[in-house]
Length: 530
Image 1: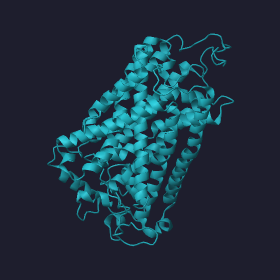
Image 2 (image 1 turned 135 degrees about the horizontal axis):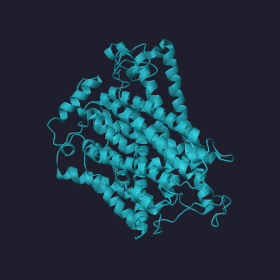
Image 3 (image 1 turned 180 degrees about the vertical axis):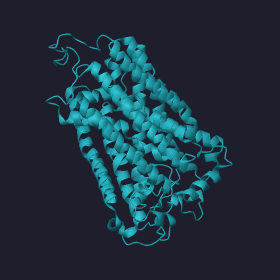
Image 4 (image 1 turned 90 degrees about the vertical axis):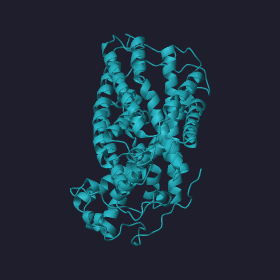
């Protein structure tokens, strides 16, 4: 893979003893924004200035002397005008479809379990709070991309945020690819779980995993997000039907799975006491451990955190300024769907009969299979989406500036298919080799989502305000500016809390799983069906 190792951007703008990368002192964007604290969110409605020049490895776009975001965006669209494959073609409704497919997913069916641990009231409050934080940080991502439309993914942003350093790009790239590949592996695993459930384990689980990986690879082949948006729309619709059916079935069936009328029933396998009518609690039960509570909290958070893909989506939008329309639609839908489905299913399955995903809580086998079957498109497509994001990250860096990127060439399509195949092979191996996959996924999420969900965007906000206000930005800030600065420092602290507490919780859960003897073998044929 040909990559430019000289990734440190030269200081070609005004010199500042504290930061190398500044806007020209006479920049209209800076003049419009200086003294404000809201940037793109302020009443001036200006995009704001850059925090740094175009990175060296992005110079191939040939932007000329363009400094402003609109100039670079116009140049990108102009350069693509005659290409067979055009990437800046995604409308905001198509971007909304991509976001819906990313967020309205199988993870919704783990909310009842989280509510059973945290209690219904704290669970619902956390759902709204995390949604609001992710909405805000996503708007920060959007503002950053408007200022720097040449960035193609979160790796470019990572380098820019940390002063153009080469190590920042490589560190972000490693986290980016690992995060996406583990998510792909999760979808290979869950697809095998579905096939085991629907066929009553008619084949070895490894066989089902191979089938799932091949299907996902084929569905990943479209080259642009605009094309994938059609599949994303179907995925989001079918997922909504799936979770709606699960909530309805939970309400109309007589009892959840594994129901026992005797409230003092003792499970002969585990020796635990459970039974009776479903118990719903408003607050956590006495004796709830930190590890259990933190795991439930992280589960809610991980479902919302998806900012890692947003720069890639915006990089293919015709009008990036329309992105908030898509974001608001998805966020509002998330709050209602996650909260209502989670609360309703929890209300009918209670603390005793909850499973994750909650399809396993349905006592009627037909109900379970019907509801789970509507989840098929998202089981496939969400992994496809992350595979596409990873593959274009690699593909663009190999073929930037060549006709293979933008034309229908044998080399281009063969390379694209090969890169996708490599990501799905890695996902398959990860899903089969790691016996504590779920806990490891939580560990990887703690390590990576702490940065991609919070730390990066708190830093981005501060860097953009510094670019807007110059060297005296703190001195000249308004009370609102100080309040927003405090909020973003708090967001950075949340990220480090995720990194510390989340990592501890995930490692402890792995230790507990080994101690309980629940860790399965590698490449096992044993059924993992619900």
